Image (cartoon, rainbow, N blue to C red; front, side, top):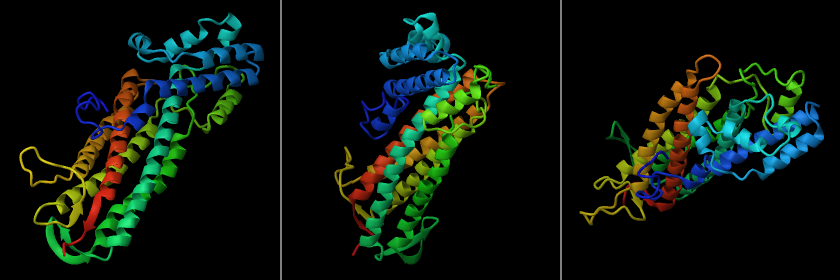
Length: 351
């Protein structure tokens, strides 16, 4: 995440998720940019825009790229792609250099790499959601019939069973899991628009090239979405829903764990530096904090919809600031949820 006291040094894994962070890291993201460049080079050769010999030379350079730090190039150009393309072409003759990136643009590379990253993140998150739902199934099997006071507006309402509350936790998560399939479909569209989003270079091969690149990357080909950021914001919305549902669970558990309520018993730590009798519901608290953070970031991400003309540097950079942090925070909340479910020793009114 963005800082959290230098990510993990001060707070451990409370507010970060190294696995999700790695998806947005230099190595993984560079590999996805290179995957686009390799697919584009292969498509240029298949369409006859460059020779197979030149394409093979270019592919060797792409495969051999040392994953060097592209940060200095970003400092200069506002993004890493120009430095990447320059490095790939550096040792190539003119014919082979023409097989690298010709007709593509930085946004094609960055957006497609971001799509591939988001899809990989969704794979990990849906796997975690599946485990969490299974965990709640086990909780229901064990405690579902136990008595629990239902509460409305934080006041005792009517007697109920544990199943009432836990099913209210579980049901939205199952819906988010189903919804993920549609979000994946919306995300799985390659970005190929060329310099201004008109998708017309290399003539007359661009349609064939674009189709082949999409197929090689496991994506579909749709209209150019250079300045339509709906897909990215839709993914952010899904993260907000997942994190928000987890935050609701965390809020309920924190209230249930209050001394005097004691509707849940949790194993594990959560000690106080000053009050030895306390056992703080740390995982529940982090789920609440992370949900609120993701919800706030979604408001910022929504502003990235406002792209001026055919491409925005500012709105685009706003995505890079917010989306990885939202994903990592949601991943951390999912981790806390798994730990929380495993820590439940009793749920329902104490005997």
